[in-house]
Length: 314
Ligand code: G3I
Image (cartoon, rainbow, N blue to C red; front, top):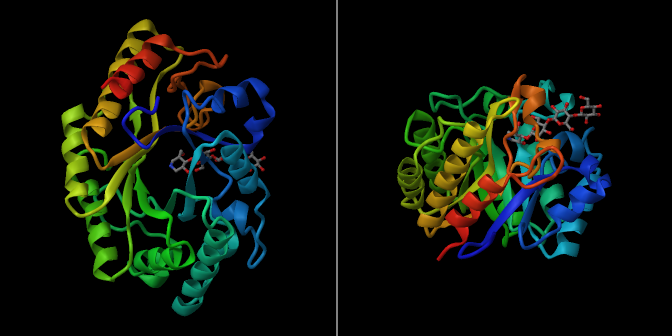
């Protein structure tokens, strides 16, 4: 599903790699040209205690991508969640937390140097109204934590494309404006930012229209960055129905069509490809069935074909 764009890909996670049927599907490069580790490169996995780095899980995903010839989006360096307690509740002063953050970024980005097409340097730094989300980095360092993080990542791997990644920024509104302000802030500090990732965790029947997504992407592109759909899934009430699936097919096509219409939209990643391993039912009780493959790792043909049509046709 790669025509005309850099990639179409899927997130994955280490426990699933024991499932042969799953891995065979993920490794089919006719479907997936890119993968993102769903958890393996987050701070609590990589540096669970100060100065102790553990790359086993992340390396397993890198190996799979290399074996398959798939691109890698690396995710994520600075995020308030899946942050170990030693950072979250550390009580560090400004200079100490900056040095902890820089050390984490430098160590991890250097370890994966040359392997990551993209790095999600910062994830979910905003509240819904577009103001900065309170987290240990913002509360201790202020908004400068963002440009410092990007500059540190750029120094460690100058070739990686550096992204800000968030949800509910897929159409115009306060939070999208806040994300555009982050791009401006990082550039004002003289640091490098190459792209913005739209997570796109959507609900069937209430996703932004294709034109709303296209014009929102263009607002970012006009600031001098590329864009990507980074975590697409479209959830519904379970058990799913034929009409929900028909609507999901349209909704997937809208997002993929928007990316296709914007030359600086470089690719689409779904947040895993099968309902068997989706994060949604554990977080949103009674919801799920969000992905193009079902719990038995069988294609939902209506959705799959809608994606192919939106993505693959010339
Ligand atoms: O690692 C522990 C394990 O030791 C423990 O036994 C088990 C019991 O619950 O939990 C395991 O941790 C889980 C972790 O995934 C790894 O499997 C956490 O509970 C669980 O909350 C965590 O969920 C992840 C979630 O981020 C956390 O926020 C999802 O798998 C992952 O798909 C999801 O991904 C995020 C993106 O990074 C950012 N955007 C939103 C997206 C969906 O929430």
